[in-house]
Image (cartoon, rainbow, N blue to C red; front, side, top):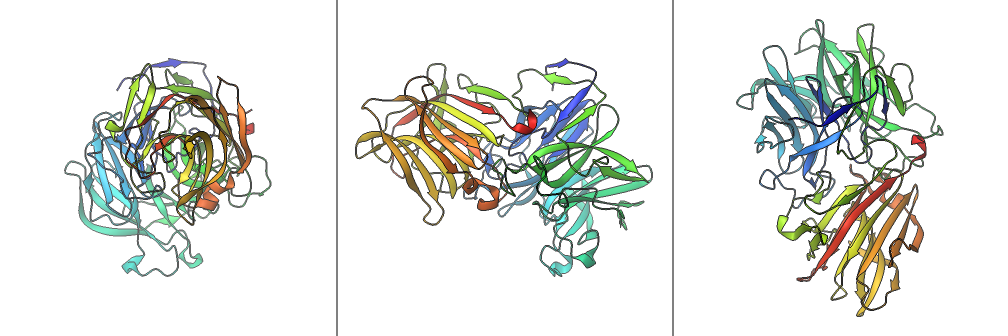
Length: 544
């Protein structure tokens, strides 16, 4: 795979998060001078985006691991289920991704000769019972290590888990021999550690280092490390664990970063070690809508142990390095403040996502109309594949805007812009009809009734088909606007509760997504809606 790149100055300032927005559970592999990074996507499709970089700062999405409905779909899965915690590795010309399809599949491996794809159909691993599988290639053998149940499936306390391992055959893609428990509970089982997960290996000298997340993927999240001279153990924990956490820092610190963990080490272009991990940026207390994001920090070896972010307990928003920055052409920006416009003339950007699968017959692209979505009876409150194409909310303060061309034929037909957290938590700004009259409406989902409540609407003159719709996120609030003439914005409603869409309220593991969404609300129709563009801008204070 050849990437178009250009070399800049002899130093690089890494900006956190390196992937803003809902990009959790990162895993990274270095192949020569190239870096490839993947993330969890749960029940969004395509699944598991693949990013490429030369400098650990500038990332370009080059494909998706799960890109064909024939590989896998997530129909019937809640949006926060689906694909959990992938891991990418490389060995002898082949790329491997291991992952968990939670609830309805288990663990699997896929392979590719090119990380941009295509990737193979999944090979299921029924012996690997648990989550977060990761492959490790030693000198002559391969291993698969993962989070699993307590010994004999008899937990001593809630959250009691183990790290287990099999030898792995990378040619026939199957486990070899017997499973062994490497870690029981965590660093100190007498203290009842919870959710030892996302394990990875690194070897330095004669030592095998097994490092993993502990504490659960919220404010108590951390990263811990063990070592042994045999890959089969016994593993001894570092006496100064955890090697990364934000849980003990003052809650009132400026622009806090929290919930850090789920790390993987990688050698940088300068030969030094770095950790790529997930964390979050709350706008107030533990409220955040942008999901778990991908961060980076330096690693130093202290007394024979790796320590993440050694100079400061607090994760920094910038780290300076002494190697070249290499920016990739035609890549959407991913870190800091940025803006972009997606048009829909020839193909969809690989960052755009659907619910659960891709129905290519339900949309079309053209220079004249942009993206045309056929209205479907399915709604976003169900577990199917409604007419929806979305892009992540990547900033605390952001705006998403669409140009819509749509004429509703009945009160059931709606098209517009949605800000979506899950099936029970969203706001929908749309064009529709009310008793035969054209209207712009704003709905809020009702988690109790599995329906929508109308917050407000405005009556339109007959024949008003073309308009712009915009949603602004402003920390704990959203505001909703429309324009019947280009960029002549009219406020429909402001100070709408954003906490309702936060992970803290909704639960689960995903972040908010702005989506172009059209539905006929259970009624069959031949109608469609056209979206000329999707425009996004983010403006967070920590990046200024």
